[in-house]
Length: 215
Length: 350
Image (cartoon, rainbow over all chains, first blue to last red; front, side):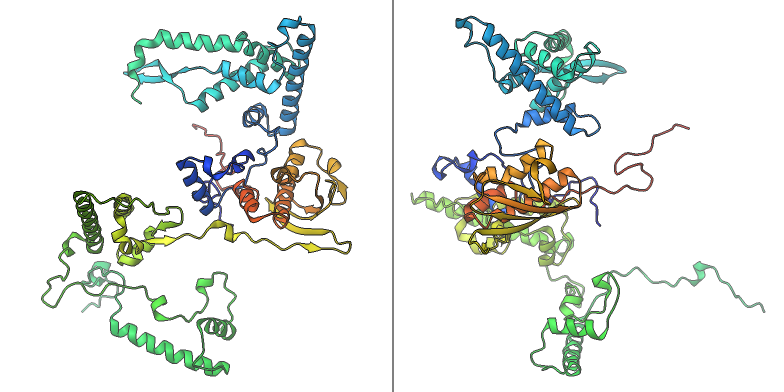
């Protein structure tokens, strides 16, 4: 068997698959020029197979799958997936409890959809600016640097997971602790948000070294 | 007198300069062609067939029959092909008897490449002149966009074959840039013939997908079969029409065979994409691989089976969603000197 090393098993001309059903039901007139060209290109080029984590059902969400993959240890996807679903269930239960106890006028402000809470919490945790180590003349400085979208999402998820794994009582289960953290992050409180603010303050403090960045 | 038995290599080496690859003269190639034709007729006689209508396929079959070879590499087995396929095309001698080269760009080293660039630039200037003339006469400029998706430029190897000399990556990209610039101008239709020399048609991918016709069983219910594979798992799926959405795998119900939600989601993926969840029944057999590989194999098999129930447009949508491609990712082999496919051994300083 010929095994290519250092590159993917697919030919570089293969394009990424588009799984969402809605994008195929749009009539021809609504598409812009670029989308038309994209469609024509897709008709001619071969397309990669959809990965097993991706599906067109309403329950598959790319953010949730990324988070589950980051929570996974030693390839135990079953456990990670069950923990994630238990987390979402606990969030829903807590929010429903709050909803039933709250007075009439506040009932509309309480958010019950766990997916919305998850997305909003992640967004609140994302840092805007990061620090990078640059060595000049023997000394290493922490230089404030803009972050890409991917890097922001990755940092937010990483902080959440490390926070849940370390700062908890020995007996608390992961779903419970994660749901606690997500609800706090949703309201802009909690240790993850604090960590984000600390990073921002450090970047502000090291503002003087911003000119060291050359990219 | 002493006789020198062993001499040093320096004394043995003759004064011969390094020569390039063998040059084939025209007379040599002609002789080879005559010999090939004669040999073809002899072979036809030997096999008892008509020498006039003896095609290349017949030659290949005859040679494989007369000289059976157990060698693995097809190129190493005995073959009889037309001399133009065996001997690569070479350039004739580029200079005359007095040593003076014919082409004015000979001393650049890449004469055909530079002459091609000069020609293409000339066409570009022509188009620009034509454009200026049209603007001067206030005539409208034609703005019909060429269909970019249906054609591709020549690859580097094809260009090398056309020019009969080596083309570097840089040179090739410069040539393609020049062609793109030429095509981008509005009045490029004048030089359409010249551009077509360097572009090739790309067939629409959908034609490569084979759609089986529907089969009908005894009770008149339509069904169709599909095969799929993923890693080491092989699956066959039979999708029946007028069903309730029951799925059976290897005689076991799907809930018992795939306890994990992710696998069941993958099985339902093609049905959910086409919106036909409760309308079909499925019976599958699967073997080999692990839990996720079996699910992926059944997904491919069911997508292929469903493509016979559905219109061509929806088959194209399924292909663009990645449901009809075989996943080529397999386990990477372990390499010697490393612990795994990528992991190296622990580095120890001493």
